[in-house]
Each structure stands twice: as structure tokens, then as C-alpha cells.
Amino acid sequence: MWKAVVTAAVAFVLLFCRSSTLDNGLARTPPMGWLAWERFRCNVDCVDDPYNCISEELFMQMADRLAEDGWKELGYNYLNIDDCWMSMDRDEQGNLYANKTRFPNGIKKLADYVHSKGLKLGIYLDFGTHTCGGYPGSIKYLQKDAETIAGWGIDMLKMDGCYANVSDMSWGYPDMEMYMNKTGRPILFSCSWPAYAGGIKVDYSVLAKHCNAWRNYDDIQDSWDSVTHIIDWFGDNQDVLAPVAGPGHWNDPDMLIVGDYSLSYEESKAQMAMWAILAAPLFMSNDLRSISPEARSILMNKEVIRISQDSLGMQGRRVIKGGEDKIEVWTRELDVTFLPSYGIAFLNRRADGEPYNYTLTLGDLKFQYMMGYAVEDVFTGHQYGHYDLYRELTVSIDPNGVVLLYAYPSK
Ligand code: GLA
Image 1 (cartoon, rainbow, N blue to C red):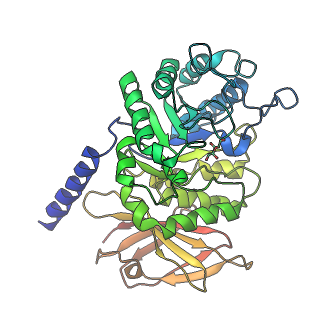
Image 2 (cartoon, helix red, strand yellow; image 1 turned 90 degrees about the horizontal axis):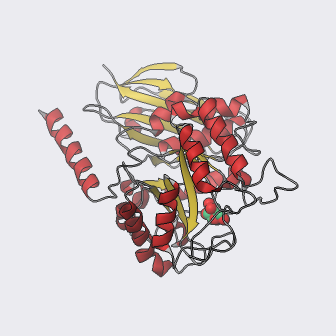
Image 3 (cartoon, rainbow, N blue to C red; image 1 turned 30 degrees about the horizontal axis):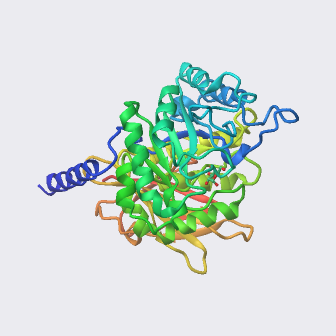
């Protein structure tokens, strides 16, 4: 009987979430793909650096990699252009167009190419007077720009918020959503509004009505410090952030930098695991033409992706903050028929050179099922065995590393 009650309650909550949120049918699980910004920035020097500059060539090459190297099949299907793709001015009719030297065939042709590979193409606009890189902004052209990108066959829009008043965003982002809806083309809408409005000083229920995802906080940089800074912010503000995430509408802690210059192997696993626990969009920003086998194996780990893409869409939470031991424990509730299973991340914030043994019981994590859980390690596949709520579980976590477990109810 109680199983039926729990199932009905979950169904009610899901129904309620759906009816009050953006209904373009997109991003039912956190979107996945590739985004140019963190790795390739605003490199427009195609004369001296043709291999790395923001150009149609770069995006076609990344499309080839996504389609041919197994990424697409795992769900990484959005290829996203960021800033610095435009010409510095609009045409005589006020339309945006791509820089003609770097994108000689225009965005429509690029979209056709990307679609021919079974991928989707995302683009970048800015709500203000200019993009962050100084290119034309959309504030006076929302409808025109929505029609332009829909006409090109764009599938996702990241709308940034440089050079804009935050107070204008509360009409601007909803207007843009309306204009995109009017085009009839489903376009996944990523809004940078909260990042410009101080992170938590926005009404997230309004955001969830108009956006499929939103950048909450600082830009990620290529460093472990930056990754942990963002994780801390998400933990500190989880009571505001976690309840607003769900199918169709996600908090976005920014890009995955796995495969870039700075993160160690352990740190890379930690970012991937934490982004899965946070139900974050998984947009890699790296060079897929030369990515190392280690980085590839982390980003392609099917079990981690399964946690990321869980259909319940609950964002995980930091349940043990860690004191002197500097070990944090995060859990994410995962979908099952009547009892939740969990992803559990043990994040080691120590850098003292040796793996750290950490012990707890599942009861400490407030798990409920008296019969207990089967526990396995997501990265190694190691089966820990069966744990009731009182049996002590010990994990060994490498410095700046993570242990990611999957625990499911079992007798
Ligand atoms: C802002 C955004 C970044 C990127 C740049 C482009 O800083 O937060 O993600 O889009 O602008 O200029």
C-alpha cells in the first residue's frame, strides 16, 4: 500500500514540476555536448593560428570528432559556438551575420553540416548591447535574432548577459523565449541571467518557466581551484538551487574542463563525478582532436553518464560538509520504481599526499531502506557488497580525488 502512495506522490510532484516549467520538450535530462569557450576563447587569429581560431573549420572538425569517435552515441550531441563568431556589425536590415573570413559559408551551412553528422548546433548571443567580447548585442533585436537563428537551423541558444541592466533581464529573457517559441523551432534555451544577478538573487521559479538551463555563477577557468570554488558555491547554496532543478530546467555550474591543461587524473574524475551528482549539463570544452585516452575514458564513462542522465532529474546535495578531515559527502537520489537508489560522491579536499580512509554508515546519510543496499564503485566497478543502515563502509579516496559509489536497494 505504502509503495503505491509513494509512487503516486512522486508522480504528482513530477506533474506539478512539468506544468509550471518551460514546455519546449527539450533537456529532459541534463544536455550534453561540446562548447568552445573555455578552451578556445576569443581566438580570432586565423592567420597565425588557423588550427585553433574561432572558425567554421574548428566547428566542423569538432563535429567530425563528436560524430566519429563515439561521443554522440553516449549523448554528447550538442556542438556549441560561443562568443566571437559574429561580424562586428549588423547588415543593412539589422540582421546578424557571421564573420565572413572565419565563417565563409555562413552559419546555415555549418548547421547543415552538423545536422548531417546527426548532431545539433548551438550558438551564442548576448541580451545586452554587446557580447562580452564586444560583438553586437541583441537587446533591440530579440525577435529578429530569434528568427535569424531559427532560420539557420540552430538547436540551442546560450544567451549571455554582458552590457545589460539586470533589471531588464526579467522581461528580456522571457521575451526571447517567446520569440523563439513563435518561430516554431524547438531551441534549447540556456540563460546566463542568474550569473549576472548575483547567483541566488533571482526568482528561480521564473527562470524554470523560461529557460532549459542557466549559468548560476562564475566562469570556470582551467584550474582545480576554480572547480572547487564552484562546487563550494553550489554546496553553500543548495537549498535554493537543488529544488529548482529537474527535467527541462537545470542549474549549470559551467563547462567540463576534463582533457585540458590543468586537472590531474584524480581531479578530472572528481569534476566529472561532481557534475553528474549535480545533474549539471555536460558540455566539454576541450580539444577533441588531441584529447588523451585518460581524459576520454573519464568523459566516456557510461556509469557516470548514467547517474548524470538519471530520469528523475534530482540535483544532488552535500550531506556531509567535512570538517578537519576535509572529506565531503554528496548524494544524489536516482530513479527507481518505488525506492530510490543513490549516487554517493566522497570528495577529498586534502592534498596531503596519501589516500584517505573514510568510514560511515548508510544510516549516516539518512538512507531509509532497512533491508539495505548493494554498493558498487562507479569508476572501478568494485563491488563493496551489501550494507544495511548500520554496517560501516570504508572508502579510500585519493588526494584531490573522488570515490563515486552507486547504491541500490537490495535484500
Ligand atoms: C561570459 C560567459 C562565458 C563566455 C564569455 C564569452 O564570460 O560567462 O561563458 O560565454 O562571456 O565572452
